[in-house]
Length: 293
Image (cartoon, rainbow, N blue to C red; front, side, top):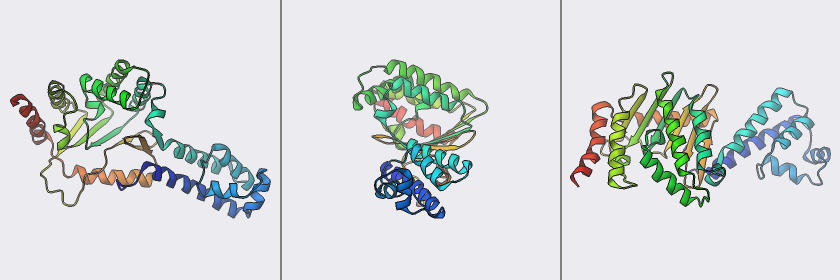
């Protein structure tokens, strides 16, 4: 998916696809828009077209109504309801995610990570949360609380929950792959001592048997492979989920054609990365610079 595509346009496109399915289902049932409105008890058929064009939120009641009037089998209703849930869950603002506090969001994420089989993270901006030290977590979560104007100060509890989530790296039945642009290693969001501690922690994390850590050197010939937006791709028992965290919220993608595009992007980017001793050397470079400052 191109990085220029906004989360709102992604959610709108998904809503339009669902609306188009409802329209085709109505047409195949030979029910006109006017007749559908009459059967639904609506005053005007414009409400029908608004739903089918994705111009309004499509609720579970809308899906059930279309399926009932068009008399489709139960399995079709179930499939469309599942797609409707996907559309609704696709975009969530940080304000919505953190409504119960920062800790609540961390605990929700922790549960998902216990079922991940293969987890891939590509980062152009920050050290991934699963590899962060408590000090860096505290910095980022405190910043998030201030930027999102959250009244509840549960940063310490959120840090504790995120640390618990890191225990998933010990699971022998899962693999955790991290891919960073080299500049991420040089970005210093907090004090020098916090950044130095974080780099040392990365070096230690690279020795974990379940972890693969790669760095894309800033000076490498990219062969036409441009940096993408940061993303996380999780293979769960029943699905593949891609999440893209942006300034205002999180975009969640589960449709196969979209997750496949991110899998292809990962392969292109992974082909540029260095690993092992070469990656460790790139981590040590900013660490040495801090020591010499």
